[in-house]
Structures are given as structure tokens and as C-alpha cells.
Length: 399
Ligand SMILES: [Fe+2]
Image (cartoon, rainbow, N blue to C red):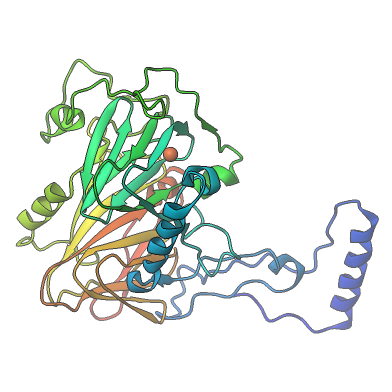
């Protein structure tokens, strides 16, 4: 916890001297306080609720901590219709006035930044019939989780993926991709990206000069594989084709599978529902790079979890952030003294270091999709997790 600010003449003098130093334009700062972290200590348990305090004063002015937050679909989704109405009546193509028809989720702890956590951005997009997002590639890794029944299509590295509700489509960094809606009803999906991380690293670029053959509309790439390519190559667990490199696009360490079908995800979860599952997560599946078993992106891990009626997970906290989309069911996530009651299509963020547990309060199974930046934390040697046993003892879940 940050110490209470010291109320002393010495401190006031230091602040005054600091203000003078600032006016010199020398770009120095006289230390008047520690840059106290927002989080509580890791080993000294202070209970389930408090989330730590930000530093005070000039240093603290720039310090931020992602807040727990829940976006209620009933409240936010009308804005998609309103965006769609403006786009339909517009005198120019929507791509020209807004680039995309979407709203981005803004974490209330991050001073208006377009991100839900330190590394994760989420936008909710609507594509009206006929809309096309032209072919491009970029450094952020991206995904879309389809929320409407009609999922439109995304073509990635020459593979056209026609999607439906519950599908997860991956567009790894360095892959050419374009999207569109050639159906009769609007398409709605949630885009998740590691955009804030790439921005922080000053490594965010986008390119739209696709060098390959285009469709007749000139905005989309022409498919070079028959539909279902990912599934034909990698759709049988434990068997890999020996004649391809498993690397697609110019990115590295990304999954060659671009399309997970919602019905397959649900069938796989249902097949496991009689198993005990994990005491802190329920029945879970991770989507992995089939060639390596690693996360689908070097930075982000995707998964799905099933909570059976009445199931309550144990309390857990991690050094990584977890962003959830509710695909089915209703329940509650208790998080750092707050309670989020969620239902279908709601989205919520569990920022790192905060205790949380999930409870299925409905009469049917609940399914959550999860995106976590755990792989990044693991790569930098900072992934840790703790749980609480039923009698309240803190258990180290990682070495
Ligand atoms: Fe993109």
C-alpha cells in the first residue's frame, strides 16, 4: 500500500524546489516520493477486497491501474444500432468517416485510454450487409469473437473463414486479412487485440498494400485455399501434416489455425462436463498453436470455460489480466469486493493482482470465453498465481 503523504515543511520545500527545477526546462525531477505501486503486497495477505492505492502527488498523477469493470450488453448494444443507422444514412462510406463501425471499451481506471487492461484492447463492431473492411496487415495480434448468428467472413492469408455465433477468428500479427458481411443481417463481433502493448513498445504499424491477387471488388484478397483449410490441416488433435511449415504470414510464434467454430468449442466443453475440472476455473479448454502447444499468440492466450449450474470456483488471483466474454448462461463474478452479475454477451475485465471467483447462478451451463495476457507475463518471468483453499488459506499455484 502507498504510504500516507508526509505532511511536513521539508516535503513542501522539496515540492517547491521541484517546481523550480521544472521551470528550468532541464527535464529532471527531484525525488519527493517513491513511485509506489498500485498493488498490494503479494505474500502478506490483506484479504479479498482492497485493491491497493495509487501513489500521490506529481508521480502519482501519471500512475494508473486498470479497474475491475463489467460492460452490460443490454446497456451498450443499442449504440451498435445507432452507429449502424448513421452509417446507413451517411453520404460517404462508413469506412471513410470512421474506419470501422464500432465502439471501444474504455477501462475507467485508465484515464480514457482505449483499452480494457494494460495490454488488451476490445472493440465491439457491427458490419451491415455489404460492408467490407479492406485487406491489410498489422503488428498487433487480433481476434474476433462472433456475437451475432450471422458471422460474416474473414479471409486470412488466403483462407476464407465463414463464421457464426460463438466462433473465434484469429488474425495473427503479420497476416493479410479482410472482413465483410455478405449476408442479409448485421454482423456483430468483439475484437480483442494486444494493441496497447504494441503502442507502448512503439511498434504499431499497419500496411494496406497487399501484393497478391484481389477479388473483383479490389478491396479483398482472393482466397487461395479451399474453405476449411485450417480444419483440414489441424482439425485432428495430435496429428500434424508434415508438408507445411506451420508458419503463416510474416509474424512468428503465432498459431496456423485461424478459425475455431463455436459449435466445436461447445461440443468439446460438453464432452468434458462430467470431469471434475479445475477448482479455480471449472472445465476449461485452451486454444493452442497445434505445432507447439503454446498460446495462439506470443502475447495472448485464449480459452473457453464451462461452469455448471450452481458451480462456484475458488478464489484466485494472478499477475496477468483476464478479459471475459459471456457466451451463454448467467452468473456472478466477485472481484476485489465488487460483484458483477453477468448474462449472455456481457464483457468484463479481471485486472491483475485482484482476487476473483466465478459463480454460475443460472439453471443451465454457463460458457465464458477468456483472453489473458498470461503468455506475456510468463515470457518476462512475471507470471504468478495464488488461490484460496476452502478454509481460506492462501495457496501458491505457481512455483
Ligand atoms: Fe486488422
